[in-house]
Image (cartoon, rainbow over the protein chains, first blue to last red):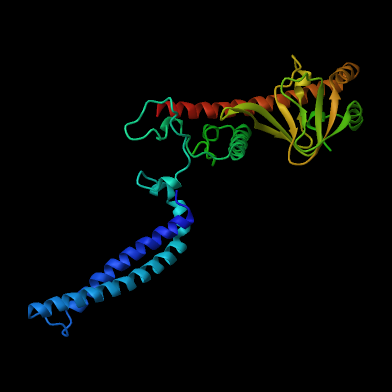
Length: 171
Length: 154
């Protein structure tokens, strides 16, 4: 899962790239279609190409800066979403430095073709809640089950016996 | 304060029973008794809440897991009157300190012998308390079994 800073920087990078590419080609198109440039002779054409290129680079640079700033702002605003969608963005292509630290293969493990520093997938525990939180969840589950059982004892019926609770342990 | 164990007793009889006991203050988080301890005293909760727990393996560690909570007026530790006189749960004062009246089994039984009518009422009250626990956990057990069956047959 990305941290907020990494999310913002990635957003700024994407914004700068998009802005730069879009600015470059737009500027090139606008400049190339202007009447002030001549495309008749070889010399004129070369001169026009150079002018178009220089203009496109200048505008593209400007748009890179603007896109980067826009991406920065957008990334800052949407950084809370990075936590929500963190699981979805977790993939093999993501930066390994932001992955949770995983136990590495021991030296005694069989040598790998490219590297021995490969996480041992079976030993990787799933993302776990702290044990105190888990114990509170268990307590909450027991209390909800007792309340459901009390309800059945007070007015026994098939429906009350198997009534659902909101316990996350059974939903 | 009305105690469920003393329901139906006259105020004189209830007073006589309470005089058999000793008032104890149990600070928050301190155990009144632990699972496996000899059960030679019954407790009437005067104030606060007593949390009953049992050990369970959670992530490879033994943790005391919540089973039930008893509050003022309720009885804790009826194992003191039921052979083999060993506590099968751990009782701990919950968030705040609790106050209980500890009734020694021997004194209690002597009182029963000397006052059979009061002893009979207390025995009936005890049957209600134990019966309720039985029904409660029987229901909870069945609900868990139902879920296990659903998971296995899914």
